[in-house]
Length: 454
Image (tube, rainbow, N blue to C red; front, top):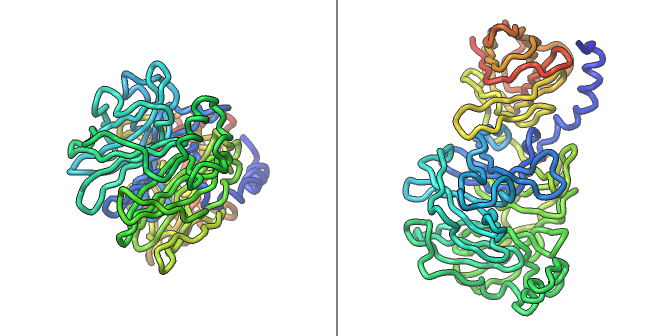
């Protein structure tokens, strides 16, 4: 077992990560964020860069949720390329967006056909946590640059799909949400057709960096606010920055409004979109700033912003601090271990069902949660549930920082999956909470949930 002094030296080396909210998820790479507000939650649909990727290596799409914008719960690898029998398997699970419509959920994704063509596809489910199924049994559309779909539902409940890399296409969907009413076409005023033809013939991605109208590159995000239609997108060739255009109707004409975010740190792409949640406006994007991160290992980040009085979007600077919580976390209900605002060392399962947990737990790994409200009466006990026990160890709970004396330490016997421990009188009021794992040099166990009680 590593000595305590060495352990806390290791903790000090990574403590700076504990105080940063961006990227918002540390345990797995989460590019191309697509947030969706539903009731009192934000669901976050993302792609997944593999840890060892040296090019785009993407097999599945992941789902997270939050009620406070800082503590995110992992809800599984809900869809993967095998969901679509006609698709190229095990790769090219690229950008996506999901929406609820008429009591069902529709997840618009892009991948490759078995023979390598870019394709749009649709999965459907009765809830965001699935199970998800191929809604068509075939691609929705196939073509060069047919990637990065975004779904927009107008005030009259008419639905539109936008997508495209270098080219920008759109079409109105039928009420079934899986077919086009009158086909699709290029969004007028966005690309120079001559330049796009040259790009196709030469496959030179530097073409058009200065010539493509509006600097549009890929990854559109279409919304509406106060009667104005907004298209937000990565722009300017590679490396990309974030820009936007506006229009008085869904069919245009679109007017380029300029840059709203710079090129992402340590990533040649940037992709995301905006939502309004609990009276706050947020812009989601990705960067490559996690350890071992980069252009093929990217992670979701969020910034809060305010629209200008005329409806324009201001320039939004990047921060490490990210956004502030808009709620508190209740520690007296069962909290899934895969709920966190930050972490070090741990990983998520890759399950598509409702069984989720943190894994790859080693000595010195930790999980952080923000704005945990213990109330005015101190907690007395904490219970934890672990599974897949490999070694025994300790789970220690700290308030506000990863040093000093823990408010509780739970002994994990490798023959017993559940344990309860007493809590010191300090566990009251609102605090950040750290969960620290201690044990031998091998993988310790997986953790399922925890819960405080009085």
